[in-house]
Image (cartoon, rainbow, N blue to C red; front, side, top):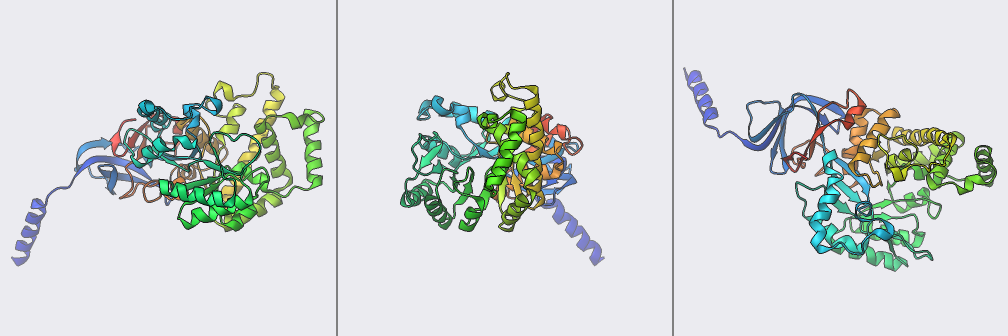
Length: 455
């Protein structure tokens, strides 16, 4: 009898217990676990305000102001593009305004976000913009809103003093002391990420890195064109690198390598004509040559990078688009009509060398994050996902590159990159499952930003 009374009392207490109510519940979801790289079926994602409160076994009786029945569809975190430039949207090079007009800021912020948010890119990292734009950009960063992509910035991309006119996204530091002071100034402004560009020489590089690192700032480097190399920057302490293709420019090339490469180019293009090619055509040829003829040197450098737990951004849509390999192409970013079919095909073959390099980096254990560096917004992120799948990457690994890997490299894994309690309620519900067909990365999707549905 006592047992019966106790049981009745317990049931009465449960009945009187207040029922939790949430702002949003997504039920019957197939949730992608970015940490384990697996899909967990029959889950409910429960959201309060802009934050995930709970992820539980699916419960159709949950109480919420809004309920979405996912019907078993795949749900992933919102994506991150870890390398973008706002000049792509507000006017590049000489067309860029010196200042962002105060009465146009809302329009510009919406214009910027409209290139990302509808595609599921809920956060971006600016890897350089004019310093005169920092006021509004930092204000956007400090005040995220549900109808806009979250924005973070490195300030200007740092370069050393030189004779040529700097690009508008670059910031000159003329001495080690100037580099140190710039880091202190950026830190006071609230900037917590720094980009060191390849036109930065070692004294300024080292001063900028050590100062930023001492302040707890995250440092990223585009190391290229031989002014610095990756082995030197690894010794200084850099681990976050931009653009996987730049690895080939840190390989040791001998005089005989140069001669052999030139002869190889001459056989296809004609004597001396290889030196007049556009940047990406030269670069893809260099990549193919390096992958085919220097595999040991590539493996050794990648091994050293992996030992230091390096990370890399991708940037593969940009060269792929040049030669018709992507699912969309801007007319201005394709080869001139005078480029022969043979040259286009050669570069498509060369692109396989780039993707082989990307695969070597991935197989070494180096974390790769999506970083497009192009003016096409979220379309380019989807394009990179499709390209990765076409060249043999698994769908779980691709989703990780677009979510948790970016969040981790940016030092923001506490906010982004996973569907877990305490993370931002930035989510994508795919109408068709990319796990079943990689083309479904391009399918219709429901985007949820800060717990608000419908972008």
